[in-house]
Image (cartoon, rainbow, N blue to C red; front, side, top):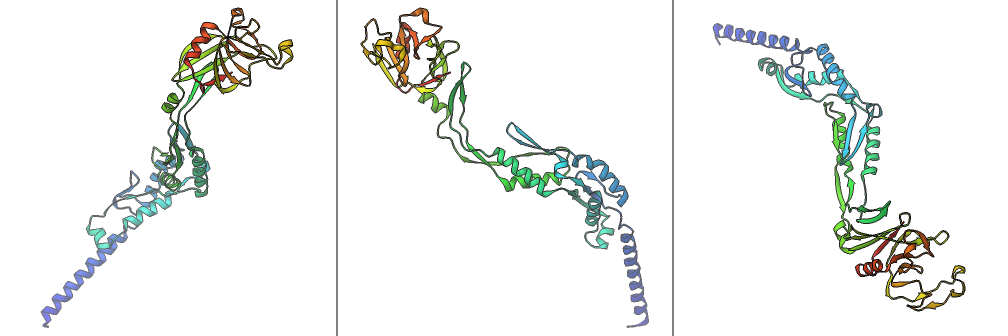
Length: 344
């Protein structure tokens, strides 16, 4: 190699050396400067120094970390409070992560590429994981439920309808993952919907119940009214008499057990029956108070017609339900054995 070539090679090496040194100096001067395009969540921190970025992150994001986390399941709402989760924004660690992201690659790429990292850093938030797990478990236990069949009950003069529902179970790993994701992301809106799976279906829906019970009887002892429901909707009201003090018609849920036209009276063996106690008084006998129809439902108690219309609207019977003859005849034709009877 001649002298000219040697001088040219040395000059080229010198230029390259200077170039590398310059690149390293420029890159080193940016050690505490976040690259352009870097964000912390939605917060642009590109071009900022460590202290400036830390102040901005603390000011803008700390309030979000201090917000409650709302958890919803249908109409139910639960709240995870920050003091329970012990949530805290670590602004210093967050900025360090942004700086680390800015320093990815090599010095030449960082300097010659315009110092544009175009990356998003998740804010560093610390919290008590055990507290979050315990919260998730409590919510899961409240949301978990077995399947429920449709049912009916009668309270305060109205038929209460309990609709069927499927059994559900909280998907615990997914739920905890959602919670931890929200805890680590101080977004303005911090809500989580509880993920569930259906475990089983009800055997009897409300529609099935209406078909199963085309008629329902409800007796209100206080108002002395018998209500007849058809397909779980109120159809008719009847004035009645109920058991007198000491002989009250027993409250409960029953069903019509027998139906008799022109019933005999099997007199209870009770003191109030006097000489008739234990006897059977045939239909049509003046001593038989059971007129026209009998709808038995519990332990010798039943619904029957009466000629003593003045007793209707009072507590006058010995435990049975009295109705006028036209009313009991009509009711008799509407209901079947097995018809539910609610007595309150």
